[in-house]
Length: 234
Image: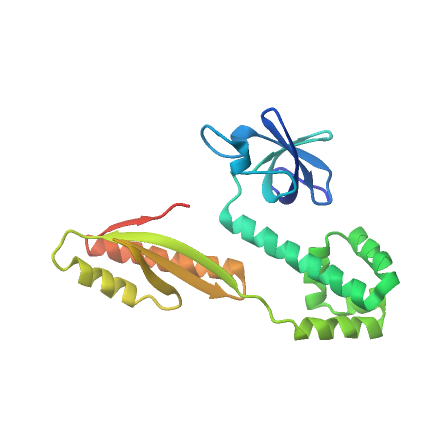
Protein backbone atom coordinates (compact mmCIF):
# COMPACT_ATOMS: atom_id res chain seq x y z
CA UNK A 1 0.00 0.00 0.00
CA UNK A 2 1.33 3.45 -0.90
CA UNK A 3 0.60 5.87 1.92
CA UNK A 4 0.33 9.64 1.70
CA UNK A 5 0.11 12.49 4.20
CA UNK A 6 -3.43 12.62 5.58
CA UNK A 7 -4.07 8.87 5.31
CA UNK A 8 -5.46 7.11 8.40
CA UNK A 9 -3.74 3.86 9.35
CA UNK A 10 -4.11 1.08 11.90
CA UNK A 11 -1.00 0.61 14.03
CA UNK A 12 0.28 -1.57 16.86
CA UNK A 13 2.38 0.13 19.52
CA UNK A 14 5.84 -1.45 19.54
CA UNK A 15 7.91 0.53 22.04
CA UNK A 16 8.29 3.87 23.80
CA UNK A 17 11.74 5.48 23.67
CA UNK A 18 12.29 8.82 25.38
CA UNK A 19 9.51 11.11 24.11
CA UNK A 20 8.72 9.06 21.00
CA UNK A 21 6.30 6.20 20.47
CA UNK A 22 7.24 3.71 17.78
CA UNK A 23 4.49 1.73 16.08
CA UNK A 24 4.16 -0.98 13.45
CA UNK A 25 1.81 0.15 10.70
CA UNK A 26 -0.48 -2.59 9.41
CA UNK A 27 1.24 -3.75 6.22
CA UNK A 28 3.50 -0.69 5.90
CA UNK A 29 6.50 -0.92 8.23
CA UNK A 30 7.30 1.35 11.14
CA UNK A 31 6.18 4.85 12.09
CA UNK A 32 6.86 7.22 14.98
CA UNK A 33 4.72 9.57 17.09
CA UNK A 34 6.22 12.34 19.23
CA UNK A 35 4.47 12.92 22.55
CA UNK A 36 2.96 16.23 21.37
CA UNK A 37 1.05 14.24 18.71
CA UNK A 38 -0.29 11.76 21.25
CA UNK A 39 -2.39 14.32 23.15
CA UNK A 40 -2.51 18.10 23.54
CA UNK A 41 -0.92 19.63 26.63
CA UNK A 42 1.45 18.05 29.09
CA UNK A 43 1.45 14.26 29.31
CA UNK A 44 2.11 13.06 32.84
CA UNK A 45 2.00 9.34 32.06
CA UNK A 46 2.25 8.23 28.42
CA UNK A 47 0.86 4.81 29.38
CA UNK A 48 -2.49 6.43 30.07
CA UNK A 49 -2.70 6.78 26.27
CA UNK A 50 -0.57 4.04 24.70
CA UNK A 51 1.08 0.81 25.80
CA UNK A 52 3.06 -1.78 23.81
CA UNK A 53 0.91 -4.19 21.75
CA UNK A 54 -2.11 -1.86 21.84
CA UNK A 55 -3.79 -1.23 18.48
CA UNK A 56 -4.33 2.46 17.74
CA UNK A 57 -5.51 4.51 14.77
CA UNK A 58 -3.12 7.23 13.55
CA UNK A 59 -2.91 9.86 10.83
CA UNK A 60 0.10 10.19 8.53
CA UNK A 61 1.66 13.65 8.96
CA UNK A 62 4.66 13.37 6.66
CA UNK A 63 6.79 10.79 4.88
CA UNK A 64 10.51 11.32 4.35
CA UNK A 65 12.33 8.35 2.82
CA UNK A 66 11.81 5.41 5.19
CA UNK A 67 10.69 7.70 8.00
CA UNK A 68 6.98 8.11 8.67
CA UNK A 69 5.72 10.68 11.19
CA UNK A 70 2.27 10.00 12.61
CA UNK A 71 -0.31 11.64 14.85
CA UNK A 72 -2.65 9.94 17.29
CA UNK A 73 -4.46 13.03 18.58
CA UNK A 74 -5.52 14.33 15.15
CA UNK A 75 -7.64 11.30 14.33
CA UNK A 76 -11.37 11.96 14.70
CA UNK A 77 -13.76 9.52 16.36
CA UNK A 78 -15.45 9.04 12.99
CA UNK A 79 -12.13 8.15 11.31
CA UNK A 80 -11.34 5.69 14.10
CA UNK A 81 -14.68 3.91 13.74
CA UNK A 82 -14.47 3.75 9.95
CA UNK A 83 -10.95 2.28 9.93
CA UNK A 84 -11.68 -0.23 12.68
CA UNK A 85 -14.81 -1.38 10.85
CA UNK A 86 -12.81 -1.71 7.63
CA UNK A 87 -10.17 -3.77 9.48
CA UNK A 88 -12.87 -6.09 10.87
CA UNK A 89 -14.30 -6.62 7.40
CA UNK A 90 -10.87 -7.47 6.01
CA UNK A 91 -10.10 -9.93 8.85
CA UNK A 92 -13.49 -11.58 8.34
CA UNK A 93 -12.92 -11.94 4.59
CA UNK A 94 -9.45 -13.43 5.12
CA UNK A 95 -10.88 -15.91 7.63
CA UNK A 96 -13.61 -16.95 5.18
CA UNK A 97 -11.08 -17.37 2.35
CA UNK A 98 -8.88 -19.58 4.53
CA UNK A 99 -11.86 -21.69 5.61
CA UNK A 100 -13.09 -22.24 2.04
CA UNK A 101 -9.82 -22.37 0.09
CA UNK A 102 -7.61 -23.96 2.77
CA UNK A 103 -4.06 -24.33 1.37
CA UNK A 104 -4.94 -22.26 -1.72
CA UNK A 105 -5.92 -19.23 0.38
CA UNK A 106 -2.46 -17.62 0.60
CA UNK A 107 -2.05 -17.65 -3.19
CA UNK A 108 -5.46 -15.99 -3.56
CA UNK A 109 -4.59 -13.35 -0.95
CA UNK A 110 -1.30 -12.69 -2.74
CA UNK A 111 -3.14 -12.11 -6.02
CA UNK A 112 -5.64 -9.80 -4.30
CA UNK A 113 -2.79 -7.78 -2.75
CA UNK A 114 -1.27 -7.24 -6.20
CA UNK A 115 -4.50 -5.52 -7.25
CA UNK A 116 -4.57 -3.20 -4.23
CA UNK A 117 -6.08 -3.38 -0.76
CA UNK A 118 -8.25 -6.24 0.48
CA UNK A 119 -10.95 -3.74 1.40
CA UNK A 120 -10.84 -2.31 -2.12
CA UNK A 121 -11.28 -5.81 -3.54
CA UNK A 122 -14.22 -6.42 -1.20
CA UNK A 123 -15.94 -3.26 -2.44
CA UNK A 124 -15.24 -4.28 -6.03
CA UNK A 125 -16.79 -7.75 -5.80
CA UNK A 126 -19.96 -6.30 -4.24
CA UNK A 127 -20.65 -4.67 -7.61
CA UNK A 128 -18.89 -7.22 -9.77
CA UNK A 129 -19.08 -10.75 -8.24
CA UNK A 130 -17.44 -12.18 -11.34
CA UNK A 131 -14.09 -10.79 -10.17
CA UNK A 132 -14.00 -13.27 -7.30
CA UNK A 133 -15.12 -16.12 -9.52
CA UNK A 134 -12.34 -15.33 -11.98
CA UNK A 135 -9.82 -15.40 -9.16
CA UNK A 136 -10.78 -18.57 -7.25
CA UNK A 137 -13.25 -20.40 -9.45
CA UNK A 138 -17.04 -20.66 -9.63
CA UNK A 139 -17.59 -23.30 -6.95
CA UNK A 140 -15.47 -21.68 -4.21
CA UNK A 141 -16.77 -18.23 -5.14
CA UNK A 142 -20.35 -19.47 -4.64
CA UNK A 143 -19.48 -20.84 -1.18
CA UNK A 144 -17.98 -17.51 -0.11
CA UNK A 145 -20.97 -15.47 -1.28
CA UNK A 146 -23.29 -17.88 0.56
CA UNK A 147 -21.33 -17.17 3.77
CA UNK A 148 -21.63 -13.43 3.09
CA UNK A 149 -25.41 -13.77 2.82
CA UNK A 150 -25.62 -15.63 6.12
CA UNK A 151 -23.68 -12.93 7.95
CA UNK A 152 -25.82 -10.23 9.53
CA UNK A 153 -24.47 -6.79 8.66
CA UNK A 154 -23.48 -4.88 11.79
CA UNK A 155 -25.28 -1.58 12.09
CA UNK A 156 -23.22 1.54 12.66
CA UNK A 157 -23.98 3.51 15.82
CA UNK A 158 -23.12 7.19 16.23
CA UNK A 159 -23.62 9.06 19.51
CA UNK A 160 -23.35 12.77 20.27
CA UNK A 161 -24.29 14.93 23.25
CA UNK A 162 -25.72 18.44 23.29
CA UNK A 163 -26.50 21.00 25.97
CA UNK A 164 -29.83 22.82 25.90
CA UNK A 165 -30.64 25.32 28.65
CA UNK A 166 -33.02 28.17 29.29
CA UNK A 167 -33.67 30.68 32.08
CA UNK A 168 -37.24 31.26 30.87
CA UNK A 169 -40.14 29.97 32.95
CA UNK A 170 -41.30 27.86 30.00
CA UNK A 171 -37.77 26.75 29.07
CA UNK A 172 -38.36 23.08 29.88
CA UNK A 173 -41.41 22.99 27.63
CA UNK A 174 -39.45 24.64 24.80
CA UNK A 175 -36.71 22.00 25.10
CA UNK A 176 -39.25 19.16 25.14
CA UNK A 177 -40.95 20.61 22.08
CA UNK A 178 -37.67 20.79 20.10
CA UNK A 179 -36.41 17.34 21.05
CA UNK A 180 -39.84 15.78 20.67
CA UNK A 181 -39.90 16.67 16.99
CA UNK A 182 -36.59 14.95 16.22
CA UNK A 183 -37.26 11.75 14.30
CA UNK A 184 -34.70 9.02 13.56
CA UNK A 185 -32.55 9.21 16.70
CA UNK A 186 -32.81 7.91 20.25
CA UNK A 187 -32.68 10.89 22.63
CA UNK A 188 -31.90 10.48 26.32
CA UNK A 189 -31.59 12.84 29.26
CA UNK A 190 -28.04 12.69 30.68
CA UNK A 191 -27.92 15.41 33.33
CA UNK A 192 -29.09 19.00 33.88
CA UNK A 193 -29.40 20.50 30.40
CA UNK A 194 -27.44 17.67 28.78
CA UNK A 195 -28.93 15.22 26.26
CA UNK A 196 -27.52 12.35 24.20
CA UNK A 197 -28.55 11.50 20.64
CA UNK A 198 -27.94 8.06 19.15
CA UNK A 199 -28.43 7.15 15.50
CA UNK A 200 -28.15 3.66 13.99
CA UNK A 201 -27.68 2.98 10.30
CA UNK A 202 -26.22 0.37 7.96
CA UNK A 203 -23.58 2.88 6.87
CA UNK A 204 -21.44 4.82 9.37
CA UNK A 205 -21.15 7.83 7.06
CA UNK A 206 -24.91 7.93 6.62
CA UNK A 207 -25.47 7.66 10.38
CA UNK A 208 -23.01 10.47 11.06
CA UNK A 209 -24.50 12.73 8.37
CA UNK A 210 -28.09 12.22 9.57
CA UNK A 211 -27.15 12.91 13.18
CA UNK A 212 -25.27 16.02 12.09
CA UNK A 213 -28.38 17.29 10.29
CA UNK A 214 -30.51 16.66 13.38
CA UNK A 215 -28.13 18.59 15.61
CA UNK A 216 -28.07 21.48 13.14
CA UNK A 217 -31.88 21.51 13.28
CA UNK A 218 -31.84 21.54 17.10
CA UNK A 219 -29.35 24.43 17.09
CA UNK A 220 -31.48 26.43 14.65
CA UNK A 221 -34.65 25.94 16.70
CA UNK A 222 -32.78 26.67 19.94
CA UNK A 223 -31.73 30.07 18.61
CA UNK A 224 -35.31 30.87 17.59
CA UNK A 225 -36.55 29.90 21.07
CA UNK A 226 -33.74 31.83 22.80
CA UNK A 227 -32.20 28.70 24.32
CA UNK A 228 -28.54 28.13 25.13
CA UNK A 229 -27.11 25.44 22.84
CA UNK A 230 -23.71 23.75 22.55
CA UNK A 231 -22.26 20.45 21.39
CA UNK A 232 -20.36 18.41 23.99
CA UNK A 233 -16.85 17.86 22.68
CA UNK A 234 -15.29 14.46 23.37
